[in-house]
Length: 157
Image (cartoon, rainbow, N blue to C red; front, top):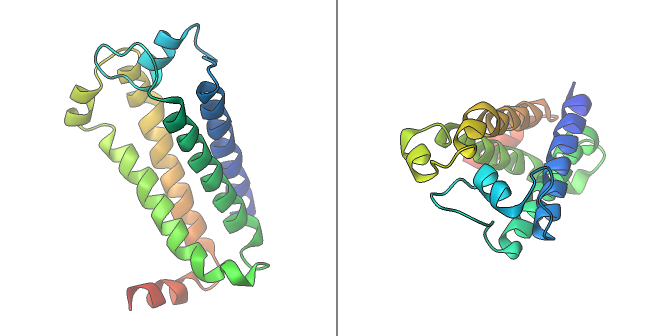
Protein backbone atom coordinates (compact mmCIF):
# COMPACT_ATOMS: atom_id res chain seq x y z
CA UNK A 1 0.00 0.00 0.00
CA UNK A 2 2.77 2.48 0.91
CA UNK A 3 4.60 2.17 -2.43
CA UNK A 4 1.39 2.89 -4.37
CA UNK A 5 0.47 5.82 -2.13
CA UNK A 6 4.01 7.20 -2.28
CA UNK A 7 4.00 6.96 -6.07
CA UNK A 8 0.60 8.64 -6.40
CA UNK A 9 1.59 11.46 -4.08
CA UNK A 10 4.93 11.90 -5.85
CA UNK A 11 3.23 12.09 -9.26
CA UNK A 12 0.58 14.57 -8.07
CA UNK A 13 3.09 16.80 -6.27
CA UNK A 14 5.58 16.55 -9.14
CA UNK A 15 2.92 17.67 -11.62
CA UNK A 16 1.96 20.58 -9.37
CA UNK A 17 5.64 21.52 -9.01
CA UNK A 18 6.08 21.41 -12.80
CA UNK A 19 3.01 23.59 -13.27
CA UNK A 20 4.43 26.16 -10.85
CA UNK A 21 7.76 26.14 -12.69
CA UNK A 22 5.93 26.76 -15.99
CA UNK A 23 4.16 29.71 -14.36
CA UNK A 24 7.45 31.01 -12.94
CA UNK A 25 8.92 30.91 -16.44
CA UNK A 26 6.10 33.16 -17.69
CA UNK A 27 3.66 30.59 -19.04
CA UNK A 28 -0.03 30.71 -18.25
CA UNK A 29 -1.00 27.08 -19.00
CA UNK A 30 -3.84 25.99 -18.75
CA UNK A 31 -5.29 29.52 -18.63
CA UNK A 32 -5.47 31.86 -21.65
CA UNK A 33 -3.47 34.75 -20.12
CA UNK A 34 -1.64 35.98 -17.02
CA UNK A 35 -4.64 37.83 -15.58
CA UNK A 36 -6.84 34.75 -15.86
CA UNK A 37 -4.07 32.67 -14.28
CA UNK A 38 -3.70 35.08 -11.34
CA UNK A 39 -7.46 35.29 -10.78
CA UNK A 40 -7.66 31.48 -10.82
CA UNK A 41 -4.72 30.53 -8.60
CA UNK A 42 -4.23 33.51 -6.25
CA UNK A 43 -7.63 35.16 -6.05
CA UNK A 44 -6.77 38.37 -4.19
CA UNK A 45 -9.12 41.27 -4.88
CA UNK A 46 -8.13 43.12 -8.06
CA UNK A 47 -5.18 40.85 -8.91
CA UNK A 48 -3.92 41.07 -12.50
CA UNK A 49 -0.71 39.01 -12.40
CA UNK A 50 1.00 36.40 -10.26
CA UNK A 51 3.34 37.35 -7.41
CA UNK A 52 7.04 37.44 -8.23
CA UNK A 53 8.45 34.70 -10.41
CA UNK A 54 10.91 33.83 -7.65
CA UNK A 55 8.13 33.11 -5.16
CA UNK A 56 6.26 30.96 -7.67
CA UNK A 57 9.48 29.08 -8.50
CA UNK A 58 10.20 28.59 -4.79
CA UNK A 59 6.77 27.05 -4.32
CA UNK A 60 7.47 24.77 -7.29
CA UNK A 61 10.77 23.67 -5.73
CA UNK A 62 9.04 22.99 -2.41
CA UNK A 63 6.43 20.88 -4.20
CA UNK A 64 9.23 18.91 -5.91
CA UNK A 65 10.84 18.36 -2.49
CA UNK A 66 7.51 17.10 -1.11
CA UNK A 67 7.23 14.77 -4.12
CA UNK A 68 10.71 13.41 -3.39
CA UNK A 69 9.77 12.92 0.27
CA UNK A 70 6.65 10.99 -0.75
CA UNK A 71 8.67 8.76 -3.09
CA UNK A 72 11.28 8.09 -0.43
CA UNK A 73 8.68 7.38 2.24
CA UNK A 74 6.76 5.05 -0.05
CA UNK A 75 9.63 3.10 -1.61
CA UNK A 76 12.95 3.56 0.12
CA UNK A 77 12.14 3.93 3.81
CA UNK A 78 13.72 0.58 4.64
CA UNK A 79 16.65 0.83 2.22
CA UNK A 80 17.97 4.26 3.25
CA UNK A 81 19.05 3.80 6.88
CA UNK A 82 20.53 7.28 7.21
CA UNK A 83 17.16 8.88 6.49
CA UNK A 84 15.03 6.70 8.74
CA UNK A 85 15.09 9.08 11.69
CA UNK A 86 14.15 12.06 9.51
CA UNK A 87 11.23 10.44 7.72
CA UNK A 88 8.73 10.58 10.61
CA UNK A 89 9.19 14.30 11.37
CA UNK A 90 9.21 15.13 7.65
CA UNK A 91 6.04 13.11 7.11
CA UNK A 92 4.30 14.70 10.09
CA UNK A 93 5.39 18.18 9.02
CA UNK A 94 4.17 17.73 5.44
CA UNK A 95 0.95 16.21 6.67
CA UNK A 96 0.37 19.19 8.97
CA UNK A 97 1.17 21.74 6.24
CA UNK A 98 -1.20 20.22 3.69
CA UNK A 99 -3.97 19.50 6.20
CA UNK A 100 -3.72 23.04 7.55
CA UNK A 101 -3.96 24.51 4.04
CA UNK A 102 -6.94 22.28 3.32
CA UNK A 103 -8.79 23.38 6.45
CA UNK A 104 -7.81 27.07 6.42
CA UNK A 105 -8.79 27.34 2.76
CA UNK A 106 -12.46 26.85 3.53
CA UNK A 107 -12.68 29.27 6.45
CA UNK A 108 -14.73 32.44 5.86
CA UNK A 109 -11.78 34.73 6.72
CA UNK A 110 -9.66 33.05 4.05
CA UNK A 111 -12.46 33.37 1.52
CA UNK A 112 -12.86 37.09 2.31
CA UNK A 113 -9.13 37.57 1.69
CA UNK A 114 -9.31 35.90 -1.73
CA UNK A 115 -12.77 36.66 -3.16
CA UNK A 116 -11.97 36.70 -6.89
CA UNK A 117 -13.72 34.24 -9.13
CA UNK A 118 -12.91 31.65 -10.38
CA UNK A 119 -10.42 31.20 -7.50
CA UNK A 120 -13.10 31.07 -4.84
CA UNK A 121 -15.04 28.26 -6.50
CA UNK A 122 -11.85 26.41 -7.54
CA UNK A 123 -10.57 26.63 -3.97
CA UNK A 124 -13.79 25.20 -2.56
CA UNK A 125 -14.04 22.39 -5.11
CA UNK A 126 -10.42 21.54 -5.90
CA UNK A 127 -7.56 23.28 -4.08
CA UNK A 128 -8.61 22.83 -0.43
CA UNK A 129 -9.91 19.24 -0.82
CA UNK A 130 -6.75 18.28 -2.75
CA UNK A 131 -4.52 19.76 -0.04
CA UNK A 132 -6.44 17.90 2.66
CA UNK A 133 -6.22 14.66 0.67
CA UNK A 134 -2.46 15.09 0.21
CA UNK A 135 -2.16 15.79 3.95
CA UNK A 136 -4.02 12.58 4.80
CA UNK A 137 -1.81 10.77 2.28
CA UNK A 138 1.33 11.94 4.07
CA UNK A 139 -0.19 10.95 7.40
CA UNK A 140 -0.91 7.46 6.06
CA UNK A 141 2.62 7.21 4.65
CA UNK A 142 4.07 8.26 8.00
CA UNK A 143 2.04 5.64 9.84
CA UNK A 144 3.10 2.99 7.33
CA UNK A 145 6.80 3.58 7.98
CA UNK A 146 8.59 0.70 9.68
CA UNK A 147 8.54 1.18 13.45
CA UNK A 148 6.96 4.64 13.12
CA UNK A 149 5.64 4.55 16.69
CA UNK A 150 9.15 4.07 18.06
CA UNK A 151 10.41 7.05 16.03
CA UNK A 152 7.42 9.12 17.09
CA UNK A 153 8.10 8.39 20.75
CA UNK A 154 11.68 9.61 20.29
CA UNK A 155 10.34 12.90 18.92
CA UNK A 156 7.99 13.53 21.81
CA UNK A 157 10.42 12.61 24.50
